[in-house]
Image (cartoon, rainbow, N blue to C red; front, side, top):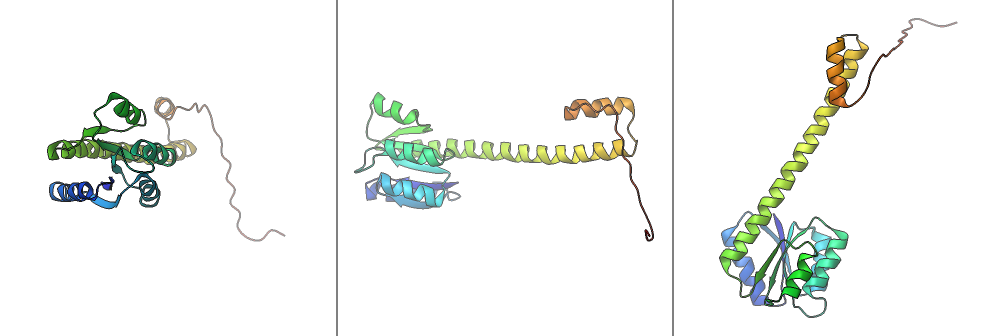
Length: 186
């Protein structure tokens, strides 16, 4: 999992970095941002899987940064860490697709649990993409095998019907003419 930490407090960023590196050494921390503008630039340049995002920062706040980043990349997951325990802040970021909302001061276990949940979700997405890719490859191989069998007249009617159902096609009859010429044509 590739991660960017966004918080205007340097001490908070360093603490999160240390905590994550200790507890989840498999996580790659791509960078840190002290405000929303830098976060937007880093997200576009580094393409992280996850961003830990503070809400209240000078300039572009966390909510606006999340909105801007999601316009360009809907795949990035967000975990918001905020000192604000208000429904409006939480609702605002959750509507933008934020996965987790953690209150400051953040407890190590909460941060790690949130990261592990998002990591699990990313792994599930990766498995689904891999399964879909393998399915498409297998389907392509099956289609070419079916076509070869059909062309070589090695398909029984019952077998042909099963292939038709599987591939969602209707093949009734087919013909192929193949000419092979040797020598010169004068």
